[in-house]
Image (cartoon, rainbow, N blue to C red; front, side, top):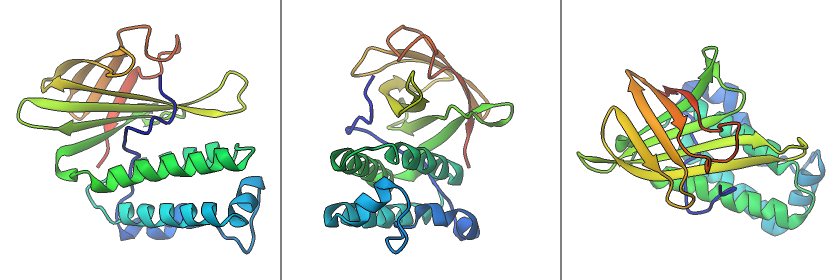
Length: 219
């Protein structure tokens, strides 16, 4: 599957002013007066990277004011992105991480939120520690676009990876949809405000069934 595929996506979300004191700090630009790790020091000493960091902050700030984008998703995806970015060992890796995250948030900000629903995979009534996201976008009265994204660690636990899924299907409570790039097939079944997802082919990542599980609607 694609890792940080640039042709998509989503990211997630954050909601209204009531949440800002608690979580908005996660979306602030880097404090270059007190850079911490290698990535922060490198970013703060590189004008191009500093500009990307500021652009990302501006896009994230815009996303936080979109009340139809659920709060938890943007927060969780930003946490995972920051963790992955901080594992970079060189300038090229840092720049790539910023460019792709910036594209994700720009896509989020330009999507008509009236026709999108977001879901997070849950485990024991909480967001699954192995974060997985589902986005259903209504195209017309018959068709929807299905997007999914999972976050996982490499076998050596030294890097964070992302696997993306994108396909189209007819609107129904039971859906079978095929990824446009890889041939990965997912089956989805709706239960009120939940969707249960199964992987129906071996092309969806690996034997760990990265997309399978129960996804809860985010409001």
